[in-house]
Length: 148
Ligand code: CO
Image 1 (tube, rainbow, N blue to C red):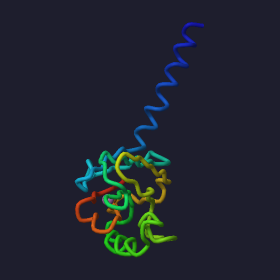
Image 2 (cartoon, rainbow, N blue to C red; image 1 turned 90 degrees about the vertical axis):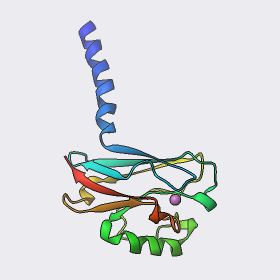
Image 3 (tube, protein in one colour; image 1 turned 120 degrees about the vertical axis):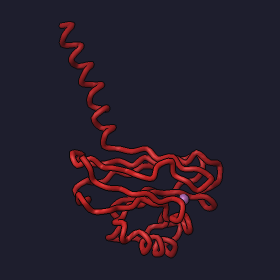
Image 4 (cartoon, rainbow, N blue to C red; image 1 turned 60 degrees about the vertical axis):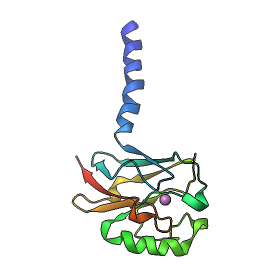
């Protein structure tokens, strides 16, 4: 009886710990920065979650941040089209097939997240994550790849 209780406690703890391996938390600031420049998605993950928080104070129309994931080679063009799409679309062109995943646009003090299927990513391909708010890709950009 006592042993059984201990085992269920183990599973309660073990499951969230496993899930954490398939997510990343990125903090962003009023200084137009992410606190990470590299994300490695484990190929054993079925789904991957990106959690974005904005620790600044500026509103999203001034210092908006999101996370957009594309192939590295598509990043600049997607960011250009994003500027045209505007804030109502979270600075992502609607139905843009080059976009693997994106979060909503947030301002200071806010959080957002996105979960996507890892089978959308190929091992060996170079991906980027970036903020598509106009002008932010120059400072808010990192690499994303599939690893073990
Ligand atoms: Co931004």
